[in-house]
Image 1 (cartoon, rainbow, N blue to C red):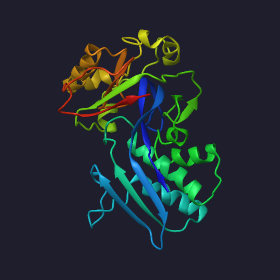
Image 2: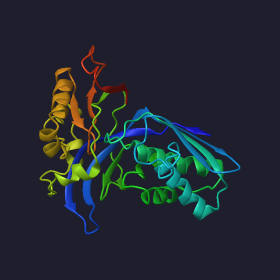
Image 3: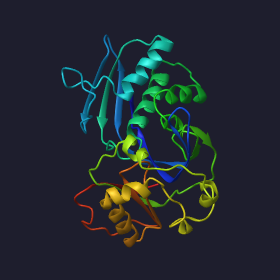
Length: 275
């Protein structure tokens, strides 16, 4: 069976407080985007996991070609332990950049859970699959359903939100710059927002500029000026709204129609399409 785990963007991100467990509570809208990896899982006599596409750093075993600590493998191990799954062969073709604020690895983990649920007829309800995904990472659970959600606490608790950007065009620009989660969080100071993000998102997209804000930009833009430059260039192209996604480093712009960008971002990795 094959799945195409798609990534997400954050529309606004407010960090409200540091938790006793060392994580942060946040407010953010997660919105799915079509940029995706490819994941195949088939029954096998022995377990195996392989990858192609973008190299996955720091996860290879001694042979150099099987990243056994990959979130997909961890997801399989979690379900194997709890549901006595047989061996499988897994292949991940990695396309979504790593350290880009798009949740690509989390999407792969959630796709593994969903594929195994279907492959072996586990009949796990959504809430059970989301519970498994939460054990793998803060935003993994979002990708079980992969639909617009207002995310609170660590980003793994969801509230319904009336947010529909169907028909808008999006351009994502990844400047070949991986920002670790630890680096991003080291520069933020949590605070209670004057206006909660949900209230800001209730207004039309044309009002979001300067109001719907990703607070990671405050510390990362001075450190990496290229990110601020890309955001401004997207606005110069006519974006209705532009922002960094998550803890970086992808910057995206939402447009009413595809922009004429020529070779403006030719040095970077770019994905564009309809929302």
